[in-house]
Length: 453
Image (cartoon, helix red, strand yellow):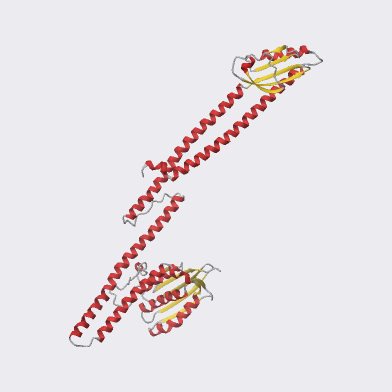
């Protein structure tokens, strides 16, 4: 993926938006803290000025102005750097003591520029002025320290904001690069799939984050797609293979009928054979279409409550005599009554009929075929089991393929679609199907989720 796409990537934009939100919150918080600290310094400064004013005013005792003058002069001489200013002015406006001229300060609090008080530096002073027995006493404190602290705080917040912004941008780029690398792997995988490599899979990092979950979902979808395509390829091959022989037989029968017709011989037998062959071909296509319809989920609209025990019992009544005529024994063991699921009764009946017919057709005389229905708190398990010859375990995964038959010569009747239809019906009902060796014989179990009202 090109780097010039980084700035347009969603991950970078989200990281940048989050960073801007964080910086905004940081600056708002800093501004609040700055104002609180400034207010606190102001309060402490005012408190210091008021305490100093109270101490100086307290020196005026017993109506002795001399003690007050001495106290003001002492404080003034102690402030050589002019960080503190003092002034004592009599009612006529004469400066009695202090280190600043009489500027006729207003009563109470005021902020005065140092230049107005003939002080050397451009400083702001916090001034409190009051009267002591008619004399105006003024006490002031330079705000230089406060301003310096405020400037340091503003600079600190400014640099901190710049550092946070740079870190946020760098972090956003790193996050975007990391996410783009992972999404780049997804794009690469999808490009391979688009070129026909259905075995390509998205690599899983293993952190269990949302990208890993998405990768798992994509891989599952690709696996199902590959299975579907492989199934379609296999079906196409099997259809071509399975229909080639009946079509050849049909052509040979028609050619034979034409030859007999030319010789003036009756062709009724050949026409009947051709009709039977065409019927078998049509049945194969109808079965394929039926499986496709079931897999598309079209029959879910017909779902209702179905008692599996009732379905199996009705099939036992039908196939017991068929098995007996074939020299076999069919037994049906049903557990508790009312083993209810949500499904299509007609399809479920056809599914179990296919399983029972499959066992009857492929097992020799003397075989016991047992149909069971058992339930627990969450599931209902049904099975069709026989003690016949069974099938090799390596073939268990193939028996549900369309048109697949263990007998490669295909001399026995059947289209190889019965168990494919069974698998399609179980998938439609959300059931699981297991093929197991019963030693001897074969067991096919179908496990349904129990219907909860």
